[in-house]
Amino acid sequence: MEHPGWQPRRTAAVEPDLPAGVTPPGTRGRILEEALGLFAEAGFAGTSIRRIGSAVGINSATLYAHYPSKEHVLAHLVLIGHEELHARLTEAVQSTRGADAATRLVALVRAHADVHTRFPLLAIVTDGEIHSLAPDLAAPALELRHSCWQLLLDVIEQGVADGVFTVSEPLLAATAISAMGVRVAHWFGPDQPYTRERIARAHGEFALRILGAAHADAVAGADTAAAADTDAVAGADPGADADR
Image 1 (cartoon, rainbow, N blue to C red):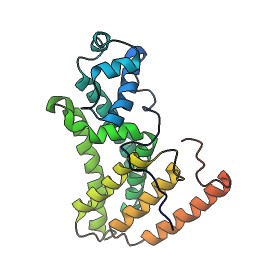
Image 2: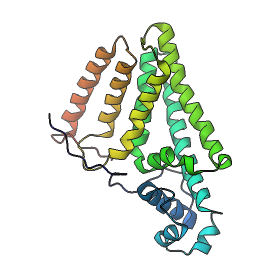
Image 3: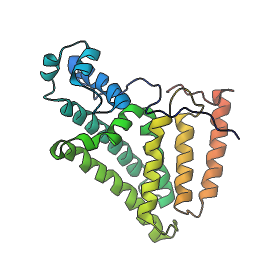
Image 4: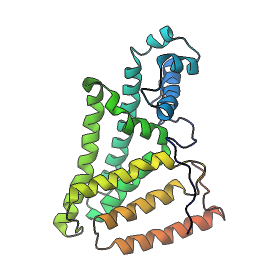
């Protein structure tokens, strides 16, 4: 096995993308989209209002008519990112209600990885720039972040109580699992061969192993078979992904 040779960088070469239905119409929406790309590439501190306005094709005064400050633009993007993640994780929990902890964990972890591969630039800004916000602007997103954490911790706690997970440090394990998904956004892009589904499957397996799940091997075997079936349908290209 050889290292794929990805180049270290802040973002992968992907276009700014926001979840369906959240982008405001007109100039306000274009401000969000352009700011997303700029914040992801240069960071909040390295992006000026003038640069955002130039990318949109407006002057600073016009931009201020839509957002009171650069910080408010960031706050809107950070909230969108947290709302999307919270919605996906909540859906994963609800869809596996009544199932064993391992099944619920895999659903959660796969949803987490999927959000970070579908919206990598939004994930980078959401996770990496929230510290730039004043407490009152960050508060709504931080509340959602806490709720997302609790969803994961509750499933891990259930698994430990049921004897499904044998991990000795549940909180550290949850931190490792979360960090694994967050980092995907920094390298996932068109220059690597993995599909979103393949990454999500792998992350589910990794999470089970981190937690010492009793049937991690069985889950991994089932995923391998499913992956083989998918690749057979998709064709010879292991990186084919029509949705990417």
